[in-house]
Image 1 (cartoon, rainbow, N blue to C red):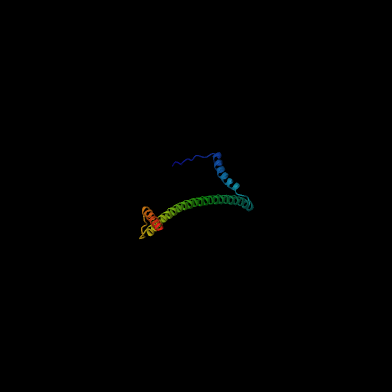
Image 2: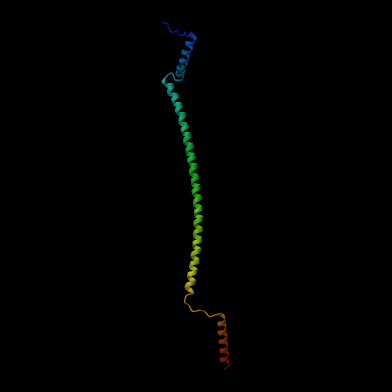
Amino acid sequence: MTAKRTKKKSGKQVAKKKGRKQSAIQKLEKELPANLAQFSKQVRKGMTRIEKQIQDAEARTEKSWTRLLREASHQLGALEERGEKQWRKLTRQTRRDVVQLLGRVEDAVTSAPKRKKASRKKKAARKTARKKAARKKSRA
C-alpha cells in the first residue's frame, strides 16, 4: 500500500493563518471595552446620539406636518372664497329673477279688470267741450 503523501506546510503559512484568526478576535476584543463602566459610557454616548437623531427626525416631521396643514388651510380658504363668490352670483341672479317675476305679477294684478283710461285725445276733446259749455252758460 502506498500512503498518501501530504504536503507539509511551512511554519510561515501556519503562523499567517493563526495570525488572521487572532487578529479578528483581537479586533473584537479591542472594540469591546475593558470593563462595564467603559461599556456603559459607550452605550450612553450611542444612546444620546440616537436620541438626538430621533429628536431631529421628529422636528422635521412636525415641520412638514405644520407646512402641510398650512397648505391645506390655504386651499380650503381659496375653495370657500370661490364658493362664496359663486353663491353670491347665484343669489344675485336669483334675486334679479324674483324681482322680475314679482314685477310681472304686479303688472298682471294692477292691470286686471280695471276700467280702461280714456286716451289723451278723448280727454282733450272732453276738456274743450266743457270749456265751450261753460262759456255758453256765462254768456247767457
